[in-house]
Image 1 (cartoon, one colour):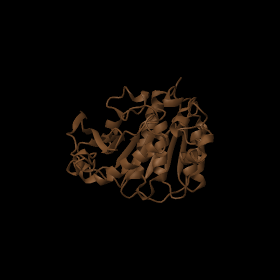
Image 2: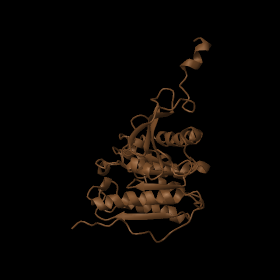
Image 3: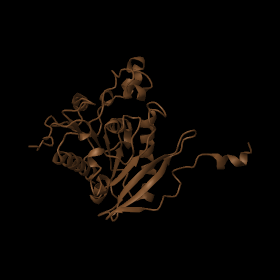
Image 4: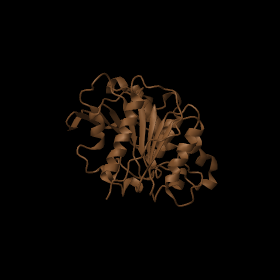
Length: 307
């Protein structure tokens, strides 16, 4: 190959690509859709959507990195779950109106590449946000990870493995947290590329419970006590593992809720969202403490108000 052609055939550098024009999906909200953040040779470009306040109240807004669910094998980056599909404005627009930027990244699914590919992608998205923070007008030093289901699992791992660049906190909704017993023919085994018994070290590395260590950021963990897909014990186990190493872990079981908040009342769903927003606000205050703390007295979960 002509060496002069090499620069033109190389994948583009997402750190230097121009940003797309903003859309305005709701009053007070700007949306940069499908922004490339990673371009891997031999793989599809990875993109994220970025929701922004139209006019930040005071300086660059902090960032929520939202990680979608879908059993690691499917899912859409801008989907918070079926209980939010009818919200107008939608949940990400509401977060932007509350003064937050929200980054919703793609990641490689289990059918494309096994673990740790998805975690590597999210780590790269976090790095891209820091690199482009000035262009984007965000404060990437004040970041919270938030994920639901499989995305909650990945958000937890991101918060536990990103080192000095780790988010200031993590919101986990009904997520698997211990993959060390994943049997064959399950989404967990597909993520690992094999049953856990065949790849024990990888299953350990893919388990947030096993990655809890001193210095981890605070967590808010919400889980339905009637979850028939990911048992509530998975959320309880993560909270216990975090508290055991001195990390703040606020665990709340949501009465009567199945996976995806199915079976929960509208009030409960709204309270889960509000509690998560409150946690993000608290963790991203400019004066928020960065050291961790342990709590043994979780606040009440959103109650079942059905009659």
